[in-house]
Image (cartoon, rainbow, N blue to C red):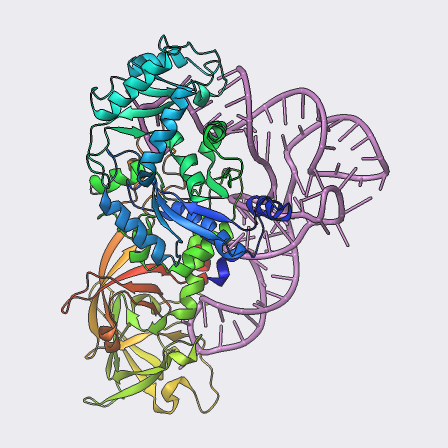
Length: 560
RNA sequence: UGACCUGUGGUGUAAUUGGCAACACGUAAGAUUCUGGUUCUUGAAUUCCAGGUUCGAGUCCUGGCAGGUCAACCA
């Protein structure tokens, strides 16, 4: 986890530093507080890395807390997937908490506020309450129930708790300021009636606190020092502080809310609503589809925890709106995968090659290095024989300048194999290249030429009789535009879906690939990084493309 | 338009708090290489605008401009 430790500073760390320097806090206590109503995505990963990264930097603590105050949207399956994702990212929480653990305490505080004349039961409809709040530009109108006797509010609130009133018939409101320019201070709702079973408290409660009456208090109860959240909660901060003013003991640690900008990525979407739409509309295959930016999707695509932490570190923390180029995410995986993944050879689009001077029934094992970046990964052997496959695009009938690969009369090196020279090109009646006849130089075994002769190109290959077919799933960006949400009037973000975001192919791989277990990262040399999908069965190996290798040749040739 | 927040290379993030604008990704050129990968070297490119204070402003002041957030019994 070293790479996520503070290599750079940010405004939150500066606040923490000064809090420690001034003696306000000795160390930090942060928390990651998702609502268990969906799957985590890369945007959450940024928040997770921030909160747990601070824990690491300051030798502090960090909780995982489920903000489960709305039983109509929350489920246990989400709790489990969130726990799994946070752990997978490599973080350990100090305490596993639930806002629902604090329902009793929250209720007591609510009664206290009523008794202090700072809260009242409002029997108006939601529509009326909303109307009275008016607009930010003009003062709101006070509810006719606002100044009812405290005893009456208390009686009604207890009845709400006992289930004596219908959903929506009344709410508990904080009595703050109906003229405030901040809408959240115009007598916000603290409790609503919801006769719905809760994933943890079952049917015990008929009323549930709203976010604003639960979040700050939960932070306070847990002893959180710095409560980090995204920018849209900025306007909630005065309310966060107002509730704390009412309940906090001056001798106890009081949390401070600090907001930072959420993550946006090009060519994808991060909104839970839109992600849900893609999954439910079957535009993608579930929450772990490798094309969406959920943690589970990235995991299945072949992203590593280290790569996501590295990405998150490079993205930084600030208050201004930002859109990160997906290229940075791709760079981060390559960076990690280059170091850890074993190399293998596989041909995506085969072209047959016959080595005319190689004996008909002979085959031999050639030695290959598993990972040139990590020699401890050892070696393996690859079978070589008279008939091979090479990549279609590694041969050109009429090669342009700077094309280093195979062409009529040219010599190239087969990776870990021999030098071969192309003598004959077999074409069909339409001029399509069907087969190449080459000769090999037995002296160049292993790829070295004793006479010091150099070849510019090295290409990958597999032995035709030994090659194993594998299913390759090639993924491209899900959307064809940088900002999929930017649509003209009447348009829909789904109009921007890239129809070719998933292409399924069969590749021919060297036989050792068959032995690689599911959920392993590999590199197919000169091609890309891949991940063995859990869909793999005994007779069908499924391999996902995580990200292609950088390719300066195709970039260059495209330009010309 | 009310309140609040934010404007630094193409994209992000820094700048010891008033002292030579830097780091990463991307990009260009070159070197290395049994992966056109990796690695290495070098280059191009930046403080929203207008005034002001100051020996000196990305940083402070004034006034603009631009973008964002807020009007669920969601979080």
